[in-house]
Image (cartoon, rainbow, N blue to C red; front, side, top):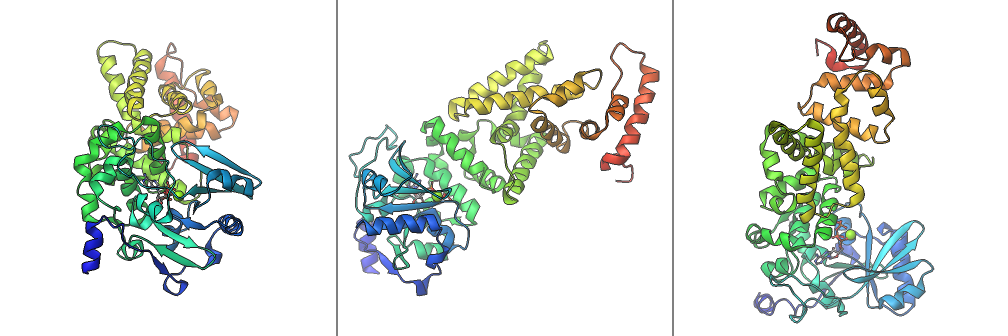
Length: 448
Ligand code: ATP
Ligand code: MG
């Protein structure tokens, strides 16, 4: 007890690691991916130490399948690379080695030291450079949460625990290593990681680690937009996007990420739309179907675009111009904080611009829309708008039927050109709609 207290006062540095044998955990060697095992054994044979570390160990202990494998070693990147046929040194924030073995990429990083107090920081305490090699103990200390600082040695099947990560995992809690305020200041993204990992793994954030988040949330604004975009993407594609966004909101973190997300969520239609989009994404990820980040971001920002466009129309701008200008406006504001890539924004624009075109159901227009390479995504977007009550369900049903129909039926479904005599044509259209609705559209059924 006293020892523990002294350790705490000394900033945990004096703690020796616990080496926990297989009898006390359940990570048998054969649960580790073959590529990660191979990487560790090659490094061992070359005389280095090598451990599976971080998310993979945490997830295995929780009984979940790891998304990917990280290996930590005392070998330098330039010592790691020549040991493997396919390996590249990647150097963004840190220099790490990607080893590729049978389609699997293992990220190998050299033990790094935590901030020693003399690393370069911005005026809010954010670390700008920290690529200093260190010991395994230092490597454990620089990691964000105790549950992320567990090392697994495939050779001995031991878990090496420097910061009571195993006991925190048993308590199903995430605890920041060291002083939470300092650690969040060093890297505000850790607050987002806390929320994302807690939501994904069903863990709670320990009270001391949770308490400072609300106050420090504005620091998210100092994180480079490209990094924020990466993190946001991880969050949205985690399979737990709904829970994450809810939790971000509860912790006061959403405002800095997606300006006005709160405003959108406070409008009944906007909230329904975003909630549906996130739920659909989670469902697709859980069933191993692909998800388009462009679609997701388009959905998250749609009601903002809509509001901006409507307000321009009220001032007398023509609808098409208003929409165009609204897209520019919203994307510019958003991209200042969140560097959504150009490729993505181009697709988002296409999907948005196509929405008013769904209203045009006469002449050649529907055929042209159908041929557009983004038709499928834009139609899915329309379906989401219909499900949230923003547009009539009838419109979505019409398009669903139109896509599936034979040419003759399609022709019959077309609406009259605006110059034509309305009465006769409209009656004809009605017959077409009803006959088709019976085949394809459950919502056309008056009993349902
Ligand atoms: P997942 O891969 O499931 O999203 P993860 O914890 O593995 O979660 P990674 O981004 O793969 O996340 O990071 C691997 C490890 O690197 C983490 O487990 C943690 O130990 C460390 N780490 C990642 N980001 C940070 C950070 N911002 N500050 C400190 N340590 C970090
Ligand atoms: Mg990982």
